[in-house]
Length: 201
Image 1: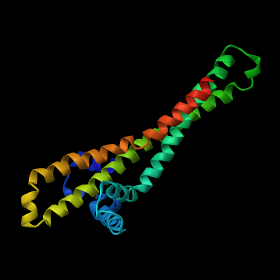
Image 2: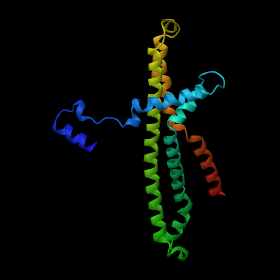
Image 3: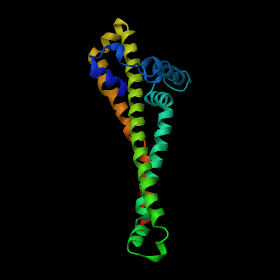
Image 4: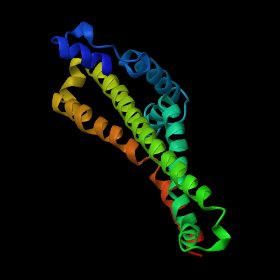
């Protein structure tokens, strides 16, 4: 953003001054991949052509890399957050002058600092990747719904109003994008409970 802000400081920005989206983040890069995954789910011959489950599988396959990376960042964040509670007793003993921890003081401080750095960095990257995955899923859905709306016949248009199509684009697709923020909560909650039980025991 630095070069763009520097240009904007000197003159009014034009369309040519704004860099294009990365191909993987643009509809041109997302839509073919999503449609391929959707057609693979529709052509497996099991049950109806399109179901909510098949649509979910196609979306997951489209953004699977972001899901895997965010899971790794969430794991690193969870581990880093437990360093402080795990070592806090040793740090208190060191600050109270316990001779057993006299040679470990600097190591404890460095461990706390490194853990906090990992916690902050993993959280920032985790949130960024989650938001990126949500935007990609939403963009892919909106594009497919829009293309489907353009190809509807006049008979189909009578049974599906434009309001329903707008509702799918503006509400349902947006909810799918927002769901990305909560996709790791199930396993994070269970792991947090187990860790808390171990530390309290």
